Amino acid sequence: MLRVRNLSNALVKRPIRPLYAQTQATPYAAYLDPSLRNADGSFRAPVSSDTNPVARSADAFLIQGGLCPGTVMLKGASEGLVVATGANSALQPFGLLANFVGGTLDDIGDENYIGCWRGPDSVFELLAPAYNDTGLASAVAAAGPGTPVKLYAGTDGRLTSTSAGSDVVVAHLIDRPSNTRIIVDLKV
Image (cartoon, rainbow, N blue to C red; front, side):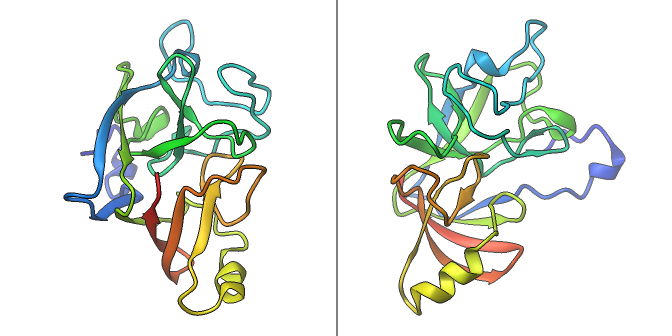
């Protein structure tokens, strides 16, 4: 449930929804890497100049100042989770963020505990803008009917059809009913 602090956010939807996850997916209990907190304990968004715990080439995608559910997460060196960069093929994607973190839609407040959806062959619906739709329609058309489109962690942490230097497939696109909704088969 969203912790709505502003009436204008009362109708905001969580952009990740498990469709087939009862036995296939696990909402893994994890925590944010300490690098995503400021000295006062407030959320610090990952920016392109970050080198710790992973080097980034782009700012993380944010909604209303915080991380969006559906963001691809990596397990950092400290066992905490960090936003995927897409450019570091040495790190294995861990799963998809289940919570809003930071900003006006924050689910966790000053706690560091988050949920991360994991589980090969689980199926999720993602609502825009939790994924990068740029080039997705052309990738679907190029693949042809019945051919899965591979989705990777983008440089901003969202799923994308363009490999940004990482060859690790995070999910396969099952369906793209519109440019505001996709259905994916998780592979991590």
